[in-house]
Length: 303
Ligand code: GRG
Image: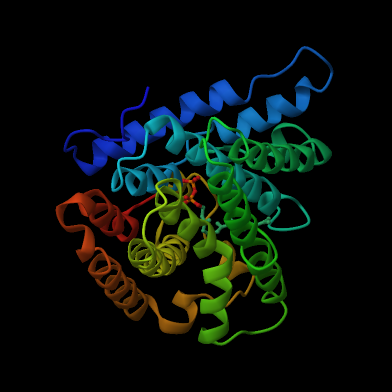
């Protein structure tokens, strides 16, 4: 299967659906439980990874790879790796030591379904499997490309990115942060993995710097708009729609974009960020239409 992610024009809802189906097939194939007693941790990894998420990050990988004609098989390896890292972060974020959540993706959280120790191990298992996947020759024939993918994902997911952002977020429960500090925290916690998802196709294609800078600019604005939309859903959405408890930030007294700016200004800021994100894609002309539609989806979504 060497076809690019989408070889013909396709609408955004269909592309998102297809990205989800292809990612789920890849996760099914990559997370097969062995016969030993360790099968329990695979079961927990599968339970969380195959739960119905939006698969927005895999979609961004496939759409980004589509700009450069990268083979679907390679892009899917990276898409599955990112979804594994994202799922690990959700499992650990839901633990009693962090958010202590009961519901995720419309189902009991991993530690409620299994137990706390198994949930910690399931997160660890997904994180490490993801890096193994990026280092797999099936992901790219050139070891330098595989090294770059590993290194960029390590930066995005680690203490300088998502893990660091989560640390600041925990501190924010006890210490009030201003809008600048919250912006930095969200760029690290949510934005870094979204940025890697947008750039991964360009890394696979060894694309020129100009294209990478444009995708980074798009991702930068998209990630922040995504977080503002998430804060708005926490205030305006319902658990039925989002598949997770709402109102948690306000209950924890946590400062968010919405608590600082108010609903109307937060929404206006998200709109502005999406216009900016779309403007970064001019270089790709019509080929980036799916990424433009994804940007609009991010701030209108209800889940
Ligand atoms: C525990 C290392 C560690 C990190 C946790 C990303 C994160 C950091 C926590 C998730 C908590 C949260 C609700 C963050 C807000 C933005 C976000 C990442 C929402 C969930 O992502 P979606 O909406 O979820 O893409 P689905 O389920 O659709 O994949």
